[in-house]
Amino acid sequence: MRLEELEAVCQEAARGVLDREGRPVPPAVVLPLPAATKVVTFPEFPEDDAERRVALAHFAHERMAPVNAPCYGFVAEGEQPDGTSLLVVVYGARGHAAQITAAVLDGMQLGPWAPPEELHADAMPFLAVLQAAADAANPAEPAGGGIPGFF
Image (cartoon, rainbow, N blue to C red):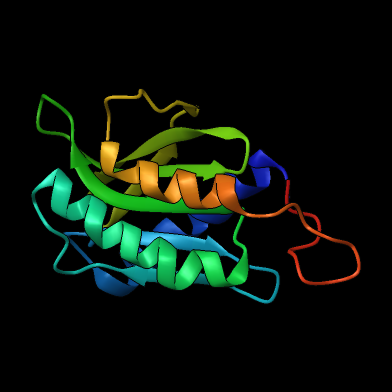
């Protein structure tokens, strides 16, 4: 899977969360796996960044490490300074810096996605645990045991 494919998978998962859960969109982690893409929502996502980090570290330990997941996505509803609602997607992969993109939310309507850019180190620091888990994944092995074709 290339980064462009990961971006598309995560954007599609974000649309799915919006369609299933409505607004406000609960934060969710997207875990693309060979058999299926898993999306786990966090309806009670903590407000505090340190608590968010703990919750996502637990997710990484319980869900990413056992399947040797080399990539992830994160979906959340956000707001621009002018009050415009956004659906935000962050995605990352082993050996690649996390990328961020967003689309304007107008009710349940989703606008076009902005071009992705590298996630600033100070933005969403709690996502570092997901990136660390992806970076710790062993490269896929062609004879099984890994995730063929991922990065």
